Length: 274
Image (cartoon, rainbow, N blue to C red):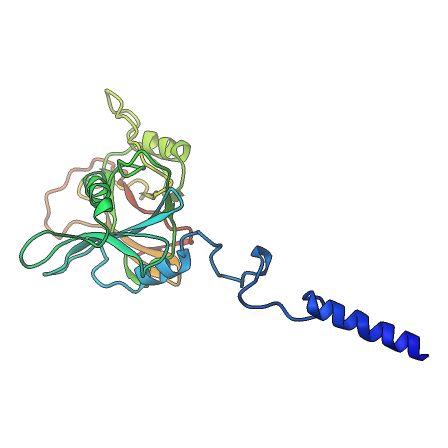
C-alpha cells in the first residue's frame, strides 16, 4: 500500500470514530430496538416486576389480581384469610417502587394512605367497583393473567344440581360464554322456567364444570374437594359422595353436576376423581 492510500485509510477511520461509526453503542444512547429482552418499553408498566411481587405475596388465597389502567398505572388487589392485613388495594405508577395510594386492612380498621393525593379519588372509586371490568373508572383497564403461586386456589360455586339434565359423565374447562351456555343448559335441562345463564367476565374469569353421570340412589352427590395450583397448571380433586350405611335414600336416578368459577389461569386443568 502506498503512502497516499495509508493516509486515506487512517483519515477515514478517524472520521468514523469521531462520528460514532465503527464503535460500540453507548449505554445511555440505546435505541428502542436495543432494549434488553424482558425489559419494559419506555413509558410502559414493568409488568414482570408486578407479577413477581404478586406471586410472592402472602395472604392472597381469596384474591390476587393485577390491572393496568390506561397503560400508565397498575392496580393490585390482594385478599386472604388472615387475622391482620387481610386485604390490600394498591395503586402504582409504572413500577412497584412508585406507589401512589393504598387502601388496606389493619388492626385499627380500614386505612387509606396516599403519597400522591391527586390519586385518592381514583383508588376510592376502584375499591367500590372491584366487580366491574373497568373498575368503575371509565378508563381502559387490562387484566393481567399470570400463574398463581403453588398452593390452594379459591373458587366460587356457580351452580350445583343433583337432578341435572347432564346425563353423561363429563369434565370441562370453559373459557367463553357459548361453552358456558351449552353446559349450563344441560345441567338445568327441564327446569321451568329456564334459568338464565349467568354473566361471566371471561377476560378475568374461567369456569370449570363437572357432571358425574347417573346413579340410582337419591343420596348420591358430587363434591369438589380442592383446587390446587402447581407449576402454572391446576389440579382439581373431586369425588362422588355415597350415603352412610342405614341412610334413608330414595331409588331416584340422580345426575349430579356442579359448576365453579375462579380467576382466569391460562394453564392446563387436571381432573382427579377420588
